[in-house]
Length: 301
Image 1 (tube, rainbow, N blue to C red):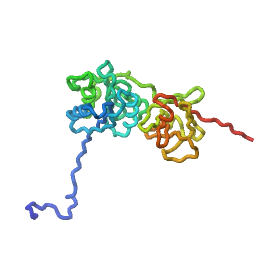
Image 2: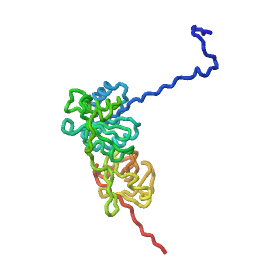
Image 3: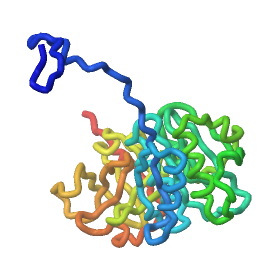
Image 4: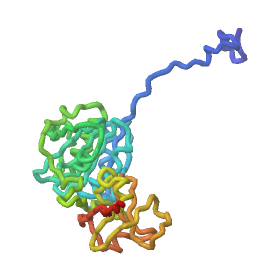
C-alpha cells in the first residue's frame, strides 16, 4: 500500500513501534568558565575565547566575571570560591588575575573533586582548596609546551598558556600530560577563623561586594544558631553588631542600622539595609571581626 507521495506503507496505523526512536548517548559538551581582571574594553577576553574555540569548537564558555579589580588576587579567589560549586562535574575554571605574568611564577592546573582549575600559581585557587568540598586535590605545573600557543607572549599567558591548557582538558587530555605534579603551591592566608584562648572567634573581612556588604570568613560551623541564640555579638572597627537577620528587608525590634546576615556564598556578612556597611564602618578587606557569646549566670533557688 502506498500513500499519496508514493511511499510504501509498511506499518499498520496502530503499530506503536513506529513511534519508537533509537536512543543515542548524548555527548557531554565541555564547559569552561572564565574569571579575569581583563575588563571588556580591550581585546583580551575575546582573544582567550578565540584560542579555546579554535582548539575545541564544541566548548561552552561561561563568563563568571571580567571585572575583578586589576591585580586583586584575593578578590578573584573569593569570587571563584563563591561561584565554582554551582557548576556541574567536569567543569574547567580558567582564572586569570596575574600580576606576576612573565616572571618565575608557575602556571598550574588543579584537579579538585570532579572539576579543574587553570591559572597562575599566586594563591587565586587557595580559597577553593581551603573550603571546597569534593575530596582531595592534586596540583600540576604546566610544563608541556606542546599544548601552548606559540610563540608565548611574556605578557599574555591567559591567551597563550592557560587558554590552551583549558581547551586541552576539555578535549580529554589528562593533567599528567600537561605537566608534572607538585606539592607546594602558593596559598593566601588561611580562610578559616581562629579561636583565642579566651574563646573568642577571631575572624576578618575577606570581601566587600558592590553593595557595600562586608563578607567575613565566618561560616555556620564557626558561629552556630545556638551560639547566636545565646547572645553572640560581633565587634568590628569599634562597633558592636548584635542584630542578626535572615533577609535584608526583615524588620527587627532594635533600631540598629548595622546587622549580620548569612550570605549566599555561605559566609556571615555585615550589612545595612539599602546602604553600604563598608562606608558606615569605614571598613576594608582584612579588618578584624571578633565574635563572642555572652555568658549569663543562672540563679538557682
